[in-house]
Image 1 (tube, rainbow, N blue to C red):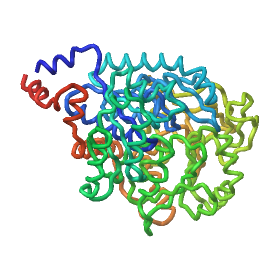
Image 2: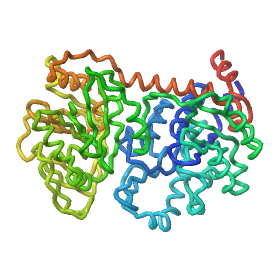
Image 3: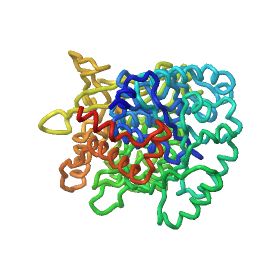
Image 4: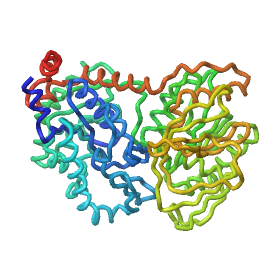
Length: 533
């Protein structure tokens, strides 16, 4: 009880940090797992990633933009996400240029050299202040690194890996992905490149995404521990169909492999894999529907005869529209429409569905004007202002008995206006910024028959009743019977956090991790004493 009260009263929260031998080794999901485990064990806990490069965004309750992974990790902690959890977000726009988002708002577009040589010193102060605030509010902060700490050309101005671990006084666990091969070389090589002080900060290893018999791996684990003097804290088996969001497009290929095999009663839905695809987690619920097969397509020869086509979000709508034209995919989409196919545009995809895209301020490209796909009577003018907002509203026309409630969020540059009166908005919204409005505002647009619709709303397919209504409309058009809506995606997501935490807890030496954090084993006795007290 005294230990529990001591943790509650301390002014500086404790820390633990996960770094990786490379990108996409599973740091984000392991961070989420630890967040849920520590929360289950009685800690107030928050995630932190100082700088994130991702086109998968998350809007905080106060309308700010952070990396999707940190929003997901905050959900694992069952707390509201804030920009302190990801104070700097880099959103690639074109080769070597990114939009720099600072505490949820666009700062400016910077090339890689300018960012490194001119901005990182300022960024260092922003990162330290955000971390300090989190440590003053939470008993434990779980930090996630970025890429690899062994990038020798970046280490002197690092704000995401070992220098951050020093500022945070954080013990480091190094994560490696055995599924991609070379796991021992990646761990030993990383340790060799680190300085003696950095090697001392590494307290152990996690080998992630293992498939097979762990006893066959044991000789390698013994060699690794002897070679490095560091403990292997766990070998985490690969977890299929986890149903939690991915951080960036590097994981699209593996997600596609997890799509359900197609049978004669499965809807075939094509998602256009744009070169600058963003917020592709909008598609996640479709992977869990039993009657849906999802395909990501980037070449016309793979388009086939889908039942529906989704054009997702884009960080550069104009350039990705050029890609549709030059690749031949625009012709395939037109052919699909002529055959009475279903088409959906989300955010950047919604902008593409319109008649015109105007960029007189050269926000997205050097093109001032471009013709859209011409499927909806819209015109989008790109502006330097970015809109980030959570939305609540209702979609009509999908259920004959009632309007369907819809929630989601907007993240986009540009203002879209209707060129002719829109008789069929996709939805009407009645809440903006958390305040109920007396009147209703149209959002998005669709054709009278509902075959083509577009919206700025990210997360629209996470709405269970609407998603099933849309899928059933496609099924009925094919002459198939409608299906009841049995997938409750929000509940499945919460269950996925619990499944992930249980899986990691089973295969990880949590007691050793608590020793790193607090110098003692897992505080189960503290929690029980608190409950009795």
